[in-house]
Image (cartoon, rainbow, N blue to C red):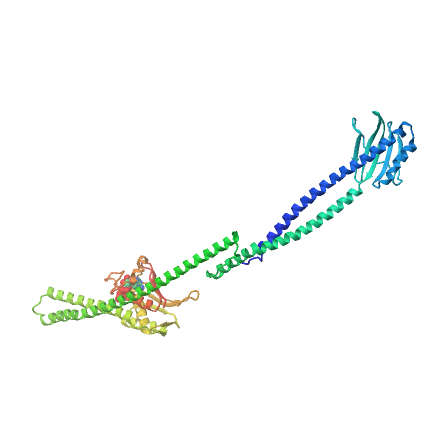
Length: 482
Ligand SMILES: Nc1ncnc2c1ncn2[C@@H]1O[C@H](COP(=O)(O)OP(=O)(O)OP(=O)(O)O)[C@@H](O)[C@H]1O
Ligand SMILES: [Mg+2]
């Protein structure tokens, strides 16, 4: 956001100028208008006085038909430079005497005197003509016309316009000065406040404060409220940070407690599993001893029971071994290095083929796959996934297993093992990774259900994750990252 420099002050100046210009123009127009009207009125009065003098001086001339005397009366108008034409006509409307400042033989437009009036006048563009009845003892003898030019009026109008312009200019200067003073006292602090608000939003620094004006007005109130708001935000920010630290400290504390508890649990289950093996070995050993040494004394069903005891003891032994392996995987320290995943998978495949040479399974293993992992643990992961694929394709006439990897949008490498085996209901896809969780019957596919739990433990200890996609009868894909 860019703050327009002193836009507020500029606007105020503009408004100031407009308002004063409008007010002054109106005042000047009213004043000039009034002056013109009263000046015209004055002119009419002056002309009327002159016409009256001429009228009273011309009575005898008209009575005695003495045109020369009337002309001499009119010629007295020479002393008034604004009178340009005058004339006296008889009551019959005949011209009796004329006066012209300059000879033009022009007759101006003459006003008619309305009945019952002694006088009348008419203004045209450049002059005024006044008519005055000449009467003697109530009898109308004639009419005197006096024409005055209006150049004085125009001159006066020009002068006033000049004065109005000068006043207007002076008031503009005054308005500018007022605006400047306003900018100093009001706009500057507000502009400063706006700049500060912009800084605060950009830098999120709530420790800054606006400088008080030291006055006792609305701007000062605004600055005070703004500073107060900043103060509150800063306090809340601080409280939030403290709460955050406290929370982090508590999480660390709990994590440490949990890690400790987890370790204890692991070592407990490790020693329990370990200790279970000895009595189990005794059960198996003594059952075998019974079978071998008391062959004659024990009948067929007794021998069958003993064999079942042995089978269960052995299966339990396997479960315990798996559990111990899982515990070992969880405790082992990880040493990552560059591992040739392709070679690792290929060696596992060799073992699988060797164990069941009769099966028709097609393996596709991508070339040149490398992983940054603990080689021993990565082997366990691949061993479990490829063993599962091998196992769950065992009911297919032709098995197909693929191990490859892909990398999406520069993310971590995602490895996958795909098979065309029995598949599983995707509803339970998450459950597979829990210990002893199996989705297939023991009679269909043997196993203890610890393999994927181990895989997950290893993958998560590498900082990766594992998930699966499948549908019943459609094969399965297991993905993992490291
Ligand atoms: N490739 C697969 N195809 C279909 N189902 C699978 C596949 N891999 C795993 N599962 C399902 O997930 C279950 C758990 O697998 P997991 O490897 O943990 O156990 P397991 O193979 O049964 O036994 P173990 O690996 O401990 O000998 C399996 O019992 C099976 O139901
Ligand atoms: Mg398995």
